[in-house]
View 1 (spheres, helix red, strand yellow):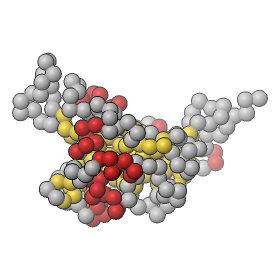
View 2: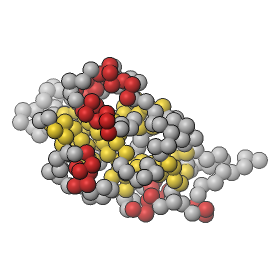
View 3: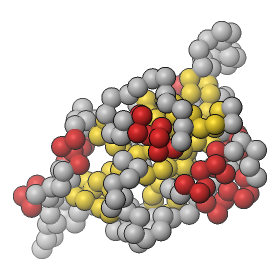
View 4: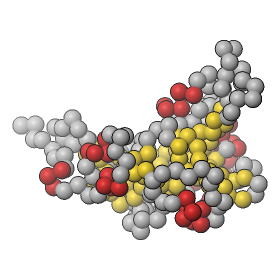
Length: 242
């Protein structure tokens, strides 16, 4: 599961990192990216990588309403190749989604509130998430594409089972791709069966977890202070049921 993440790297730095063309649209730094937000992605276009923006939450091409996208922010890698909402995108429309880190919430014994964690690379380089994207056109009352209507491009993050680092916090994690696999993932002609081994838990050592404050719970909060480590008095501590 990945329901919030950080997108703070400037687009020119991301373009250099991916060897990609810069985006036409520049987004503001956001330390609390929420579903349906516009986000940076990388995809193959005209035999080169392109950094561009998409809405987070995949809207299948057949959907009658774009609102379904808010429930499609993640796709389970185990079922995405067969699931109607994602299988067409898995075959031909794969992308990379850069993140400076992401958030996850851990249950705390005896507490209703969960403890949020900021999860990132120890070297603070971007995490590169495996994504899918789709183009959707507004529909008329009969469910047909409206002629000349502007297409909406949306994306989703593929997830897999948690590694040992993530398991104490959540049983799922995003799929991360190393640089040597980017071209293979982005190639629309790639054999999808050959891509399945990439959809594995991250190697140990890739991620570190930092407890942060519950300020991140509100999507209205988007500043850099959200990734600061929580002090002892800000942590949600277990309550002895006895």
